Image 1 (cartoon, helix red, strand yellow):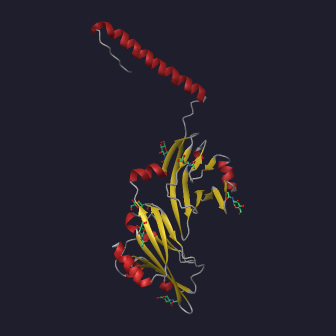
Image 2 (cartoon, rainbow, N blue to C red):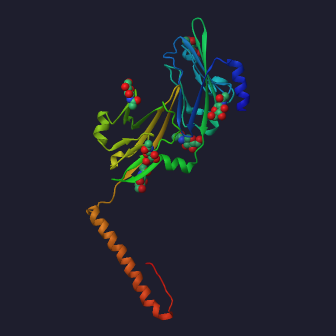
Image 3 (cartoon, protein in one colour):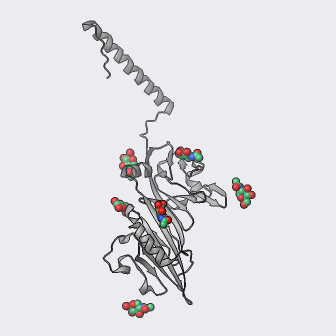
Length: 280
Ligand SMILES: *[C@@H]1O[C@H](CO)[C@@H](O)[C@H](O)[C@H]1NC(C)=O
Ligand SMILES: *[C@@H]1O[C@H](CO)[C@@H](O)[C@H](O)[C@H]1NC(C)=O
Ligand SMILES: *[C@@H]1O[C@H](CO)[C@@H](O)[C@H](O)[C@H]1NC(C)=O
Ligand SMILES: *[C@@H]1O[C@H](CO)[C@@H](O)[C@H](O)[C@H]1NC(C)=O
Ligand SMILES: *[C@@H]1O[C@H](CO)[C@@H](O)[C@H](O)[C@H]1NC(C)=O
Ligand SMILES: *[C@@H]1O[C@H](CO)[C@@H](O)[C@H](O)[C@H]1NC(C)=O
C-alpha cells in the first residue's frame, strides 16, 4: 500500500515536492509545518495517502478536517486532527501505528495560483504499553532523583525543549543552551534541574510539588513533536528520624535476623544432625 501511494503521490506531485522524513513514537503529538505565515490568500490542503483530510482557505466555509473533507465515512482521525488557522500547519495528536504513511501538503497561492508541495513521510514507531508506562510514568519518593529520557533517535540539529505545566525549563538559542532561566522555573526548581547532552531531564532532590505533567518538544526541520511524561512524587511518612538513624535501625534489624537464624540452626542441629536454615 505504501508503495502504491508513493507512486500515486510522485505521479501527482512530480519530482519537485520537498520530501521530509518524520519519525515519531506512538502516543506523540506531531505538527507538520507549512512554513507559511498566513493562509489568508492561500489555499492549504492536506492529503493522507491520497485522501483529503484537511483544508483551509480565506473562506471559513471551505475549511474542513477529516470526514468533513472527504465524505467517505472516513473517521480515521476523529478528533485527533488540528489545523492552525493562521499557518495551516497540521497537528495529529496521540498518533498511532496505523497513522504511518504519506502526508501530502499542497499550498495554492493566490493570485497567480502558483503552488508549492511537500511530502511528509511519517513513520510511527510502536511502543509496548509496558514500555510506554515505564518511560513516561515515573513515581519516586520525595528527596529522590528522577530522570526523564527523551527516548528518541535525535537528529543532530534538532532542538529539545522541556516544559513543566507549560513553564519552560531550558532555553536554546543558537548553540547556547541554558537551564531554568525562566523566573517561575527558578522559583520552583532552583538548581535541581539538569539536561544532559542526550536530552535527558534530571530532577534531583524532588519535592511533592514537582508532581505533574512534563512535556518534551522536539523541534526539527519542517515538523515538531510533543511527548508527555508524568511524574508522581509521593511523601515519605514523617518518622521524625534522620536518614542516619533510619540506616542504623535497618542495620540492627539485619543483625537481629541473622542472629535469629543462627539460633534456630543451633537449636535444631542436635536433633537429627542436619542443617536447617530458617529465615524469619
Ligand atoms: C458561509 O455559509 C453560510 C451558510 O451556509 C452563508 O450564509 C455564508 O454567506 C457563507 N459565507 C461565505 C463567506 O461564503
Ligand atoms: C491514545 O490512543 C490510545 C489507543 O489508540 C488510547 O488507548 C488512549 O486512551 C489515547 N490517549 C489519549 C490521551 O487520548
Ligand atoms: C519513508 O520512510 C520509511 C521509514 O523511514 C522508509 O523505509 C521509506 O523508504 C521512506 N519512503 C520514501 C518514499 O522516502
Ligand atoms: C557557538 O557559536 C559561536 C558563534 O555564534 C562560536 O563562536 C562558538 O565557537 C560556537 N560554540 C560551539 C561549542 O560550537
Ligand atoms: C544522559 O542521562 C541518561 C539517563 O541517566 C543516560 O542514559 C545518558 O547516557 C546520559 N547522556 C550523557 C551524554 O551523559
Ligand atoms: C502517586 O504514588 C502514590 C504512592 O505510590 C500513590 O498512592 C498515588 O496514587 C499516586 N498518585 C497518582 C496521581 O498517580
